[in-house]
Length: 588
Image 1 (cartoon, rainbow, N blue to C red):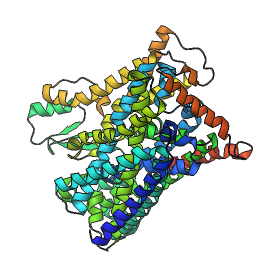
Image 2: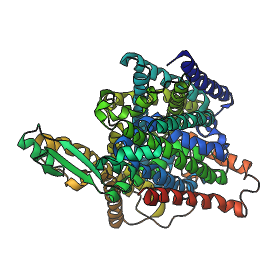
Image 3: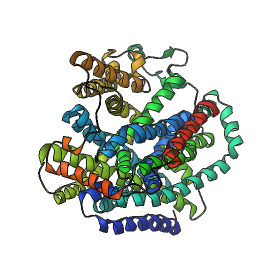
Image 4: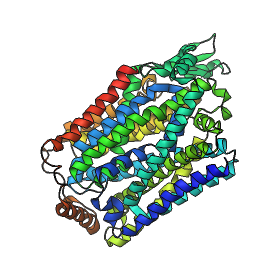
């Protein structure tokens, strides 16, 4: 990296951070900090949703993932996340928005009781700090491979980035974060397109990609979203007893090759990715927080159109980087440390033109800042409202909770560094899959069952415990089988992609069984109101303040009548159909 490269990185990101701090001047209350005073227009909400969804881990960890699994992963972004946004905007989040809620966890108390609310907040802390951990490691590889820094220096730089993100997030709140996200979106998009076209030229165009991968039947499947996914484990050095233990996890043993092959069928793979994407959009409060900050219902719905359009287009460029990298470097052992997560930094390190590398690295940094600030603000909101104010300190003034939310921001960002030692071993995307199926999928089931069925109030906690219990048992199945030769689950349920539908079915079944025993709830009445809020005067008064804002601001002229009212819905379903066509027809 030359002086000019670093000047570009620091200048672009420093300017955005400075502007974010400038916007912090308008923060006067918790409503300003948590929900930007319910004043954000559709285009800021939509671009911020996308910028939050795509971070350095998507550029680096996801490229490492597609280096291994190829276009199969497109289903998660192009179909799953888009479907999740549509489901949230039109069905799940809309009643919460009308009720003046601040977090998606608040809804779970009105539907299933306080335990579901608190568990939702804590699960999201685990889920999203893991994402920040993945992002920190992605930055670490960027600085190590591209800049040649040693581990101590690279990790210190990652810590500095996290601190800077904490500062302007803590002062500025959601408005500062959302506007900064839009600017960071521009930088990261330019960078992503630049590196994509450079690498495509190196590989000889798209025809060169196909030619390089077609010689190997396994590699050629990377270009098809509808191909089965084989996983080959080398057991040639294992004893017969160890091989028998490994076979408890499923698969076919080949004595000649000394391998065990486990294959996930294409339909199960696609279903797993679909649930993964929907879970991201619905469970993740970084997304609901932005929708709740929309100035009108029309802005909320239209934001999904913007986010979905950019997601479908940019997912192709971002996720296909791993496939381009596999065409250039087909042997994983040739990568630094033999780690597939290093493919993106390795490709960037090959750029020789002065200034171009700086733009790409600036994009990686911008993607990191946009997600550090978003996750930091959303998790602090959850911990402040759904844990601290709900359980421990319920009756302080608004200024107190504003300060608590600000101070919690660096705390939750700091927690993410606890994951780093485990994630440095490689395969970050696969580790992410394992943990999200254990905890996030049962929580997604609660939101869906709560909105569309009349299951009993107690069933939420029961279902969440059953679903999470299955997830934890599945995570323990591997070491138990290897160490003690015990099969605690059928091999079909141990597959990481089968865990998604299995967790949903078990959670839903537990909720239905509980409701059959205790009775179903009466038909839903009006959306939950602020008067149903429990836990302290501030939680009630803050929601009432949002409802006052909604009454005084009204609807944007002309957007609540006629064809304009239906335009967002038509566009969203059209974009979802486009994502389905790309994944299930064009690339299948």
